[in-house]
Length: 544
Image 1 (cartoon, rainbow, N blue to C red):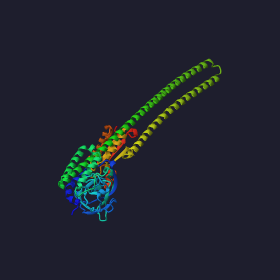
Image 2: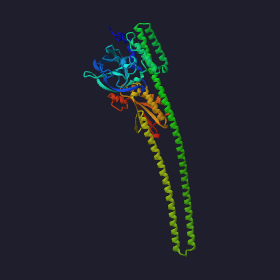
Image 3: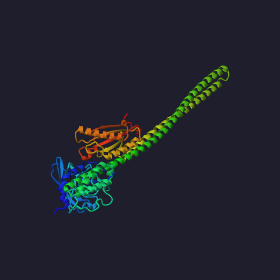
Image 4: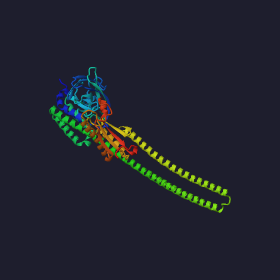
């Protein structure tokens, strides 16, 4: 006699493709609800024939094991998974009702390949396919079949055997849904699973509805949540009147899809709400800091203006004193010459030698007085020049200090280096969807924080440069690099930065920073760089 789970397998085949598609196209949940883990992936060669890879236990269910037959063909890669020794998923908590097979790409993106239904002996099989050619396989316990991201409850991961054909690739990290996203108070089903009288899809639908409600979907995604409630009621009514399994399962699976859509949308909107609040707080703080700096700058400007006025007054006084001294000197000289002439005319016959000595002594004294006045005037001019140089050095040091401060602040958000062009901020390719120019949520969050810092320092200019690897045509690469650079510029303008301070340009694949013949090198070349410049940080490069 077949188990209740095995009896439902034919019904699952019709709905499997829709669940897989939903798992492969929906956006990620907010980062606050996720964790990350490293894993090894395999690059399967198209036309290389079928190969097998082991599925080994993570320790969650020590006796679990299995294998997958993988064959990469033009257009798709086909997978046949066979697992054994799995515990019933409710062992991990009342919220877990089924198992899902996942693929993770070398870039860290996860894809729901379908639900693995196990029988009473803990055995199950799944035939599916994916557009990926290089990926890692693993199995997780899930609350329902249509989840968009894998949970933290990993039970099986792929393990390379000596007979496995393909290139080994390292996936540094991929996202797992935090277990708290699915936990609720008490037993959501109010009893143990009874698959003899109730299809598993009904439990999954109730579970999905309870999870969506606990995540605030009734408030943040009310329209979709209402559709879920309507579908769940149809399924419950069909179960109550003992309609056929196909009618019950169809309504229940539709309820699960709506519940997952509502949960994901609620999580996204809550994250957007959090980011908006953080952005408002950052803007308020930046405004306060800018106003304080503006007030300090005004005080400093007034102080410098007063000092300059005093310096000009001192210079004018010095020039006037010099002119007066020169006039007095000329008058003294003229008087002395006249007196000398008069004395000579009056007493030529008297003590000529004495008169000459007196005249020479007077001339020597006059010369000494003039030289003393000139030396004093030069010393005052030298002191003013030294003071002006000191003020210029102080301004240069202030620019260097601001540059170092911005470098440290930007590095907290994105990788930043100091160059002759200015501060170069690197946005890696992973902050965009593969082959697209739409910013991911984490990229928007980082750019929002970056904009808050730039707004606090008027006078900064941002040059946004898009780059690609050499994959694809030059025209396609140029277009993608332009689109990515302009996506960043548009988002920064939305954050309040003035359009006149932002320039966006794409360079296609013309400026690589690494070898395009390797995957790692191509990933480094797929980037957007933001060059921060301006005289306030000692760099004149930027919009003139």
